[in-house]
Amino acid sequence: MHDTAVIALKLTDEVPGLEADYIGADKGALFLAGQGIRMRFAVGDFDSVEEKDLALIREYADEVIRLNPVKNDSDSESAVRHCLACGYRKIIVCGPFGGRIDHAYVNLRLASLFPGTVELRDSRNRVICCGEGKWEFGSSYRYISFFADPEAEVTLKGMKYPLQHTLLTADDIYTLSNEITGDKGEIIVHRGRIIVMQCRD
Image (cartoon, rainbow, N blue to C red; front, top):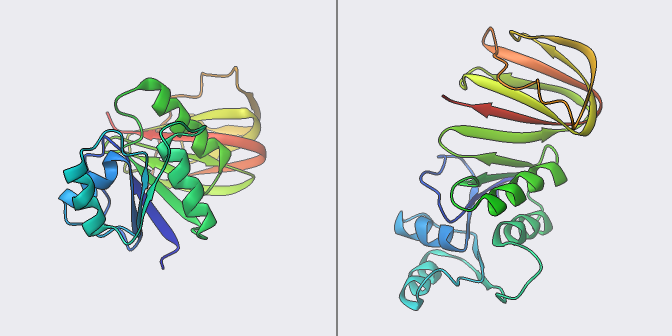
């Protein structure tokens, strides 16, 4: 088993070629099976796939966890929590933003609930929540934005708009559209948590 799990969601249009275990969440499992990608497990209520599709999913998944459609969490949350129970230390959720905005919000909250563990990614965006410590980010995305969750004291280095021991709250939204000036930028979270969003134009 790898340390990293990649969870594919319903509207995934690509998955990273990582040394990782792949997990399909609901229709994301059909996407992976259609690409011939082996899954450690597939999880969901599978209310958006037909029985013939489920047969294909079973062919490519080591295990299929079929959930009751009447439940208190989303398929993506169930997949994340199952990955955590299996001992994965890094979870990359692919395709978390397309489609319904309520599901996109839930996925953003998952990154916040599990700082440093759950990363959200699609072809244009990357989101991670950073707890206390020093974090480095590359410059492959044009923009980088920071939002306190719910409060954080941060220092930003190597960026167009640096900050020094600045207290941010959830009401501060001026910290969007920053840019890394060199090969990498650095954020130091002195206390609290900060959501970091990297975006391509």
